[in-house]
Length: 395
Image 1 (cartoon, rainbow, N blue to C red):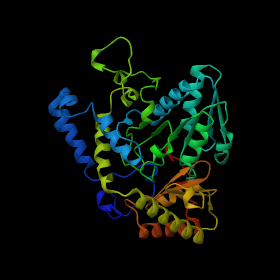
Image 2 (image 1 turned 45 degrees about the horizontal axis):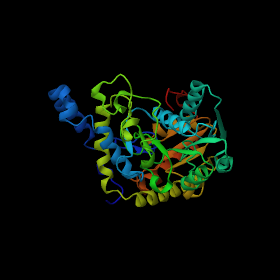
Image 3 (image 1 turned 90 degrees about the vertical axis):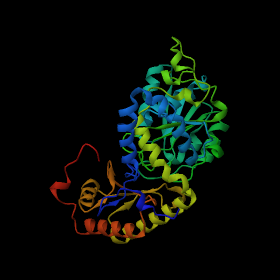
């Protein structure tokens, strides 16, 4: 397909949407598919939908669709639960694989929930584990013989800085550590090849670049040679070898299905499954190159018109994901002024304005127009309005 694919999305008139890195827009056909799942599947088949409509098989079926976008072989990705749960599962399994080590290594730019889950797991195990965080650029050199697991988000949520997945995975494994990658800002944004990287685990969400909708289920990848060795810390009913035998003791499924926990969110999964269809003919290499071109254009336009803004994303596109971030003392208010003028990005404390670039529905004219409005907001001090100072629950 030729990018962009705006006709595949329900985009509001007059809106320049540069926030697909936080929540992707609604793909056409999804609302109708969910409505059919509600009215025809749930409404007419009732509980029969688990068998007649394939609800129980959704987590694996949709997992394979996601797997094709992240270089994972069939049967190595399963859907369900939230990203926080999947982080917990991957980390717990990794620690069990290295029982003689006690250090979890991450970086100071990692998304807080990943670090929170690590802290919670450490407290729960109460076995002398330590979470060590270092600057992103220092991660590779910080891996040593005490490291049980290296847990990183490939693309930094705040700055867009991109780790070298292959190199860091190699360094971790050379030191005997287990590698876990969070692909929240990678899946659907850039080329990912988990098979080539060789990491043990990967997790990610689907409501950002994959356009699965708010609350869309997360995924977990387990390297195929480890599938039968992984010990699920959350021994859920649907991760059992035979859930409907109702055994009183847990026996894990002989596949990645053992990483399932509870009942799949059928309606959310249905929305995601429909949304993923538009990816069937998308060339990820083309998508990545287009994303970089749009990002470079935006940086040039903004820096020319807004000298008060500081680029906090890497200038080298090869070291950046599919977002661009600028720091500004009054960043929150400036973003609210932008949103009021039809340019939607978002803000991350303490002073970062984030803009996502998704070539599926953005083109050069959109980028130029967004940069021009941002220039006007900053140059003319349009952000300095009391209405833009009031913070909402979600920034």
